[in-house]
Length: 263
Ligand code: HEC
Ligand code: HEC
Image (cartoon, rainbow, N blue to C red; front, side, top):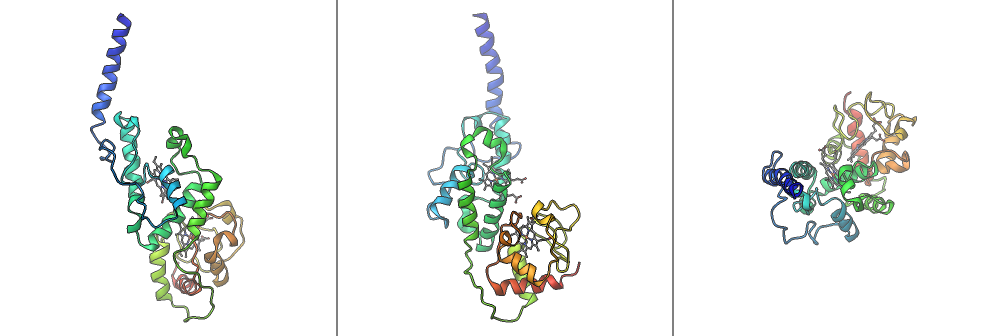
């Protein structure tokens, strides 16, 4: 009797503050305790194949969408705080509920980043997979995502005819389609690209290249860059870049630009 009494006090003393604290949002309010929204997390009119939508809805949308399905532990601080922090950070990267609002270039970059994150095992977050064991990624999931990333919204064009290479146009393409992962002078997901033309592959000191890239023996020139940008995984299998430029004219323009960027 006495023991049961003490136990209920102990419970009240720990659970009640935790419940109250869950109403406080030190990292920002991710909307966990709002009533579940009536709309779908990834609306049906979203421009993506149904198979992809189901996969992202099941395994990514708890963090990367406006309407997380918060489980019971949303009510308990500090777990709720950690969850909120993750959701806000995840949403800052991309929000699947607003997918149609991204430009085609942003979508293309995000698709490539999703493949890279999933293949490396970084996403879904490991602590999330501990709780949601069914959110683990299967080889089939990876195939679905990879096929989606490769199905470019830009039509394929392999013609060698067209206008002469134009570095100004190349610069505009670089700004739109490469800067999601690269800058000229700093390392992001990809290595800095100033002076890449004429550089040995995988040679920026300190950049965490894939083993595939590090062990390759290539100097970046017009031909190697063209092959790499056409299909990186064909040119260097198992490399970490999942991004293609299917149009020959755009590759020529990009290469002309990279060629004249000083180191
Ligand atoms: C438990 C929450 C959670 C889940 C589930 C989750 N993510 Fe994330 N994701 C995050 C957080 C947090 C970040 C931001 C990491 C940072 O800023 O350091 C992130 C960032 C990312 C990024 C950007 C990485 C970068 O550095 O550019 C990609 C891409 C991504 N997630 C893809 C996915 C995909 C694909 C899934 C589903 C297979 C997924 N995530 C599931 C929490 C999550
Ligand atoms: C989704 C992210 C992403 C996008 C978008 C992207 N890249 Fe990359 N890129 C990478 C990563 C990651 C690597 C390192 C690959 C490795 O280590 O296997 C890389 C490597 C490279 C390299 C080799 C550099 C070296 O030091 O050897 C070149 C060249 C390159 N990218 C060019 C481009 C160009 C041009 C674009 C735009 C058309 C582009 N990339 C778009 C992620 C990206």
